[in-house]
Length: 429
Image (cartoon, rainbow, N blue to C red; front, side, top):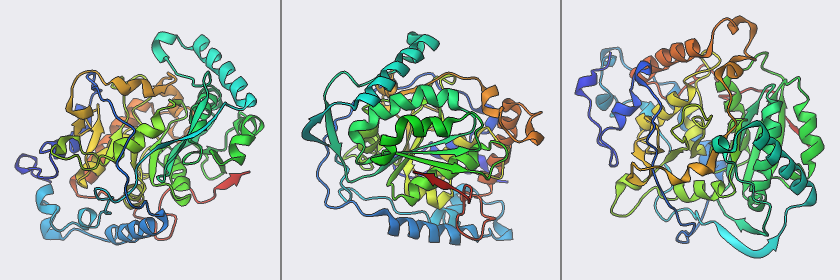
């Protein structure tokens, strides 16, 4: 058992990070004091943004080596501070871009355009359907179709990763607005949706309504027959792996009920460009938790991270019950690996711009309200007698114990690629 009282942290400006990562599951609660920030989209030109293939191959090789590591028997009671000096899970972590190494700029082109008529029509129709079903005061989505679009470019490729199983009723309300809001960023911002045996016709509906978005590469749609019941970690891992295999630099988990604001893609790139903020390490960031602080609004799972970190950690822990605590555990493992997380939750190492006032960017993060019964509605039959709360508590204890043992890389039982997510995934064209 680790000596919790003896632990100290000395990594990059946050001495409380380990305490955050090791919060026992029973003590976790939603933070209600999110914070303000204001970002300029202008960043200094950086020489080169690399292709991700080599970086991912290196992270994968390091992950394989870390997965084989077994802590010595005489060190099983080591503290985290002691463990960080010899534990391969910590020592083999990927190198993230240094200051001025990647070009994180997001540039507006001079060319202007309007949304295609088909997209304008379905986005507007969906917007009013959404407001009718969900009070405006609660959701306040933004739909950017009323003005000419400024096309944007970036050398950093962003992947928005979504998994779906019988959630067509949510996808039909979120996806049209998300695609409309991402249309001007389509050269570098990509949406990845993996459907797992849905019986509600959502794949056919997406193809019928968004074939042009598929054709231009904004929307990437896949089907997977491997899951007989929904498993959040496995499904999320599959969607993220599709983005990694498509050479995305940065990944964002986007649950099916989430809606993307037109400014959100640029916000992610700009935010993660600030890995090193001169004279203020408290503003530096390696990952972002885009949680508004409202535990009922569906944004807790919106996590942005570098692709090589996700590959190295092998994503979410699949050796768990189908739902609950996978997001918190993933954030905690990032922290234990030495990463700094900007956000408004108890899993964040830094509050937004070090200001504990209200986070002005929360309007960029919106989701359709749903209760936890929907989350576990489609789990495999053997789990249907367990409610979400029980799953969350059980998973929290299990994954907390793994973190205490210094096990940050998960899904280590797999000996061949792919090391996380489902195997049989087919792209829809």
